[in-house]
Image 1 (cartoon, protein in one colour):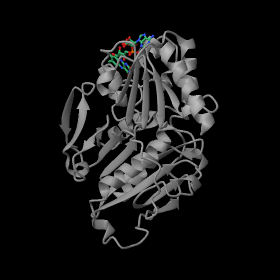
Image 2: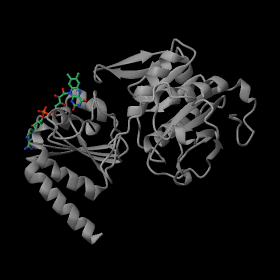
Image 3: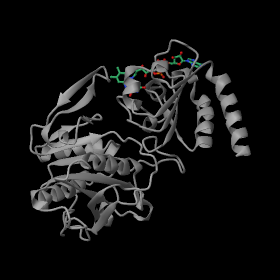
Image 4: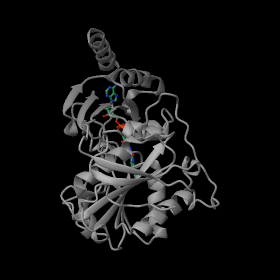
Length: 346
Ligand SMILES: Cc1cc2nc3c(=O)[nH]c(=O)nc-3n(C[C@H](O)[C@H](O)[C@H](O)COP(=O)(O)OP(=O)(O)OC[C@H]3O[C@@H](n4cnc5c(N)ncnc54)[C@H](O)[C@@H]3O)c2cc1C
C-alpha cells in the first residue's frame, strides 16, 4: 500500500521540507460526513496563509466521491482507504490505518471533526502515538498555532478561555464542525488516491463493531444545517411532535437538552451540550431551553439563534439573535402554520 502524497500540481516546492497536516474524513453508509467536509475546509482556511504547509486527507471506508465535487476547498491529496474492512468503525483497524499513514507521511498535526467516532479514536491514537490531544473546539489564533502552540479553548463550559501548546511532536485536534455555507470551490485541486489493499487491517484484535441505527430519513443532529431543539419546558415526549414537524418543514433535525434525554423523552444521540454533541448549524431554534452554560457549550458556534421561552429573563435570550417570549404550545403551532402558508405560496 503506497500513498504518494505528492502535490497534484507539483508547484509547491520541496514537499519533504514542508510541514504536513493530515485531516481525517469519516463516512457513514458510504457518504462522507458533512462535519468532515467542514473540518477539511476549516483546515484549508488555516493553511491558506501558510505556503510551507501541505494538507492531506485520509478517508476511511468505501464512499462515493461524486457529491464532493466542488465542496472541498484548497489543494491536497486525500488517501481513500476504500476497502470493505473500513466500512464500519473498528477501533483497532482504524487506529492502525491512521497511525500507518501518519508514520509514513510524518504529519505533525492531525485534525478530526467532532463526532462520536473521533471522540473514541483520537484519545486512543494520542496514547498509542504519544501525541498531544486537544478537543473541545480549539481556536487557532493564527495558522502557526497548530504547529507551535498558542491555540485557545473554552474551559469550564465556556466560562474561561485557556491557552494550550502541544508538548509532543504530534498534535491531534478535534475541531468543532462549523457549518460552511454550500459554496463552490471551483479553484480547488483535490486528488484522491486509492488505498486498495487492507494491508494495515490485519486481524481485528478487538472485533467490536458498533453501529448506531438511525430512524430512516432522520438527520444526524451534528450534521444538520438547521436544528430545532427542545428543553424540559416542552413538557413531555409527545410535545416533541411539534418540534419534529417544524424540523421537517425546515429540512432540519431535532435536538434536545440533557434533562430531556435523562427523562427518556429523546435519544442521547440528539443531546446537545457539554456531555452531548457539539453542533454548529446556521439556524438554531431553542424551544423551552433555559440556556445553561452546559447547553451553550454545545451550540455556541451556531449561526442565527432563535429562542422561544416564557421566561423573559431566561439566559438563552442573552445569546439569541431573535427572542419570542411566550408559551411554546401557543407559539410553535402558529409558527408552523405561518411556515406552511409561506411554503405553499413559494
Ligand atoms: C457536568 C454536567 C454536564 C451537563 N451537560 C449538559 C449537556 O450536555 N446538555 C444540556 O443541555 N445540559 C447539560 N447539563 C445540565 C444543565 O446544567 C441544565 O440543567 C440543562 O441544560 C437544563 O435543561 P433545560 O433548559 O431543558 O431545562 P430547564 O433549565 O429546566 O429550563 C426549562 C426552560 O423552559 C422554559 N419553559 C417552561 N415551560 C415553558 C413553556 N410552556 N413555554 C416556553 N418556555 C417554557 C422555562 O422558562 C425554562 O427556561 C449538564 C450539567 C452538568 C452538571
